[in-house]
Length: 133
Image 1 (tube, rainbow, N blue to C red):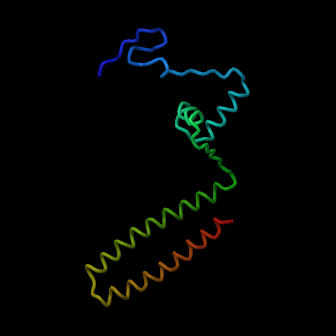
Image 2: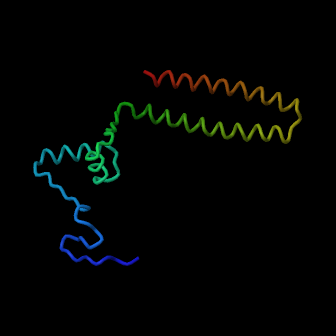
Image 3: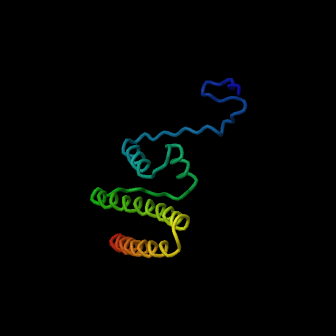
């Protein structure tokens, strides 16, 4: 891929039309700081993406974090991770039971597994209940 020759002092070339390059200035310091705060809270990847979204009227979202809820969110994410691991291990256990054990043994072990699954479901429901408040 060849690099385009820049014939103009501001970086434009024949294939890069004039209207394609936009530059803005915000002279007021308070406005600059306000814009920077909104950009950081928005979660946009770049400042250009942030300004483009505002100009084109896309949805504006602000991400806030409450330091008081950090421990709760960490614990909740640990529970979700453990639940995922348990689900994967559950599938592996069922496959092993069906492959290597007799029907009677499999049914007995699956019964125990179901009781543990019910305990896990109650724990998840309790976590959901706590999350609503």
